[in-house]
Length: 119
Image 1 (cartoon, rainbow, N blue to C red):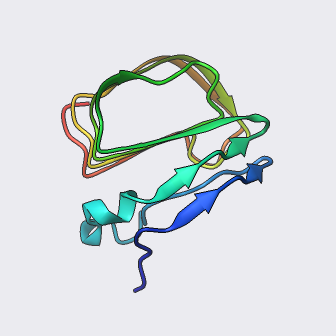
Image 2: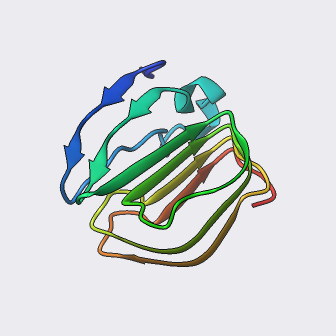
């Protein structure tokens, strides 16, 4: 089994797809490092891909195309329409996050949480 650590994914445009972090077949083997990468300036279907790591107390902007959050606490994800991407919202090692009033359509997976509690 191979895992990726500290990857850099920058300045890409994903159409009807996105980034998937984690491994749902071997989720018991995941560590925090599986969700801590350098992901910047990417879009999904022309909308920003928001990636956050190691932060607290924030709200994700409402223009998101995909949301990936690693090792974060007290995050609010609300009032979004997400479509045509793999796993629209991914939380890895996150706690006290709220997802409210989100519509997800035409996706492979909607919301996935890895080793995340009290969300």
